Image 1 (cartoon, helix red, strand yellow):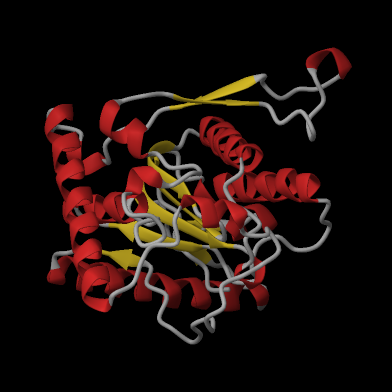
Image 2 (image 1 turned 180 degrees about the horizontal axis):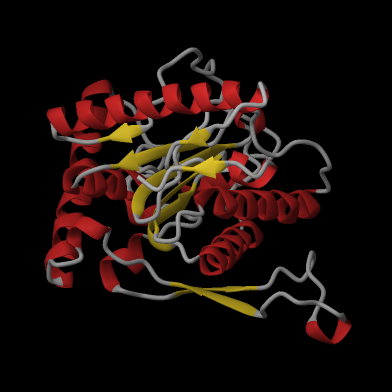
Length: 298
């Protein structure tokens, strides 16, 4: 896996897929509650600011900001805990997530942040007619109305306090606008999101009518077996972007900086392995904990 810079204050879209695209996250009440509980607990522990989230039957999307620059720890705790909680409910012991590195897309500008919030909230469209029809975990209502999501501690997995348990009885999640919209009146931001969501729903409905297809619908989604997977072939060897930015030149600049980070990191790693003095680039994560290395401050 290639090293990725971890720098405080950035906004991202995180994606993780279930092993073999199986429906381990089929949206029954237990799984929906577990998703919210694990996400809220991990976000609070690591100071992540949530902007949008959805759990489909075989993958999750989370849009969040990372003020502390600790998103790898957040992903480790969120993904790891959710896998164990759902595996325990399913009676499974094997790998829950696929073997690929979790997708982490840097949201560089205002347009990219709004695009990914809308993409996340409308991800169920096509399976259901409206984003709000998704029967599982979606932050749509919380984003548009400012509602707080409350999740209870999954009792099948965690011990209660009187039995030595240390996890909170409930977790609350709030979804705030991304950093680029922090100066915009909240109602204006919500109106933009609502309009964009409705636009996606309308376009999808027109496309279905043209193709004479229909959505799967809530009833059939909930009737799927959790060990099933989609019947179509899994796309392979596709590009996996790590930067989203509507501004062409800003995107090129960020990609060039990422390339420079990789080059400096690999040079420093080779020097370190040879026993020479090495200074790793700003954003170095894992080597800071594996060895007492020096990291540039700029």
